[in-house]
Length: 130
Image 1 (spheres, one colour):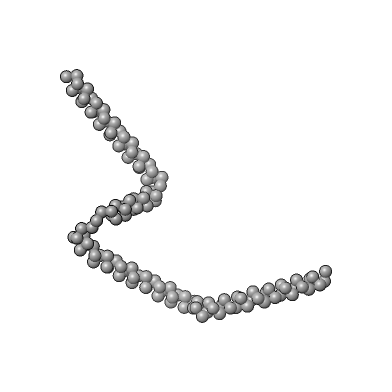
Image 2 (cartoon, helix red, strand yellow):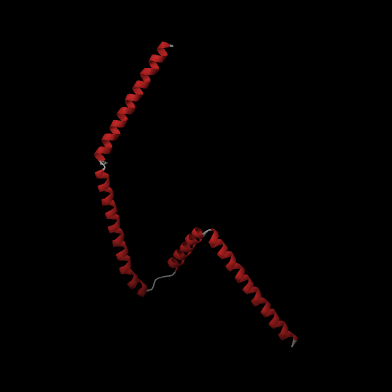
């Protein structure tokens, strides 16, 4: 009977050790989540994406998710187009068109050339005086 008693005690000890280890791991995970929640979120998303990529989709999932994928794609296209149009309209209202930008760039280059010419003339005059 001693063997059975020792086996039960050994099993109980292993069970308690496993429970203690699980509690310790859970405590460490909670501490890490509190100190770096964004990192944990990103890591969780990466693991989820990896698992999702590795598990093949069933025919039923494909049939159910295909319309959702098409709807999401269409929604993103529509939102992108609306944002582009709104942005272009805002730029036009502020006079920031392609032609206006070209004219402004030419004006800036002309101003830089004039400033360089003036600086060169001033440098030459200064050198002559000394």
